[in-house]
Length: 290
Image (tube, rainbow, N blue to C red; front, top):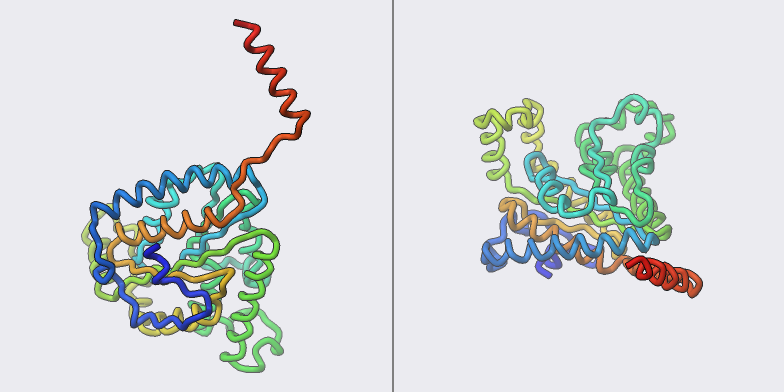
């Protein structure tokens, strides 16, 4: 699948600046891509039904990106093809005081779906090694001195290890974690910010803080690259997808969702002999009513 080009599982380094932010290099036919997306959405729905009925495995899709990369629209246009009864979407905002009084994975663990279901994390625990690291927020937390005494670099190196171990723990307990970074260019982000300013219906999506964070665009890019390389594994891979063309991004995400569902347990339970006999008896009774 085309998304494989953007997959990172620890076997090769991720160089975000060498990766495209659009699909021009992928020889695209927009009409065909849209048709494939539609087919993927249908297959997603069918496979999800089996995942739910099977009930042995859960799936977590992590969406990370810089502002205006299209996380919300991806959830709406791609994940909207799934049955909402088997999906829970959690948008992780700035942690509240209760969150900060616990370890940084506490609120994440509370949001895990039951096996047989799908969770979509709009931002995630990765903010705790991205925003926190960029702005040195770890120094504002109520942590014992021993957790910070080895310095900033070692502090986040430990967090990378903790995240890898946490994802390994989840995988060993029946969860698949797929992490997606929407790779938007700085110029496209600028255009989308201007659109949010000019379009009254989108004003609510924009704030001055967006522009302030944009000043750190290159720093964030370097951090994302570091984080991807430190936490990409075969069992919990990263995808760094081009995000400048939303229709193509949505297609790539639909490919990833379908592929993940195909790999997951999605067999319909087989009835025991006595249960099959009951069904046969029920059929006989219903047919006798005619």
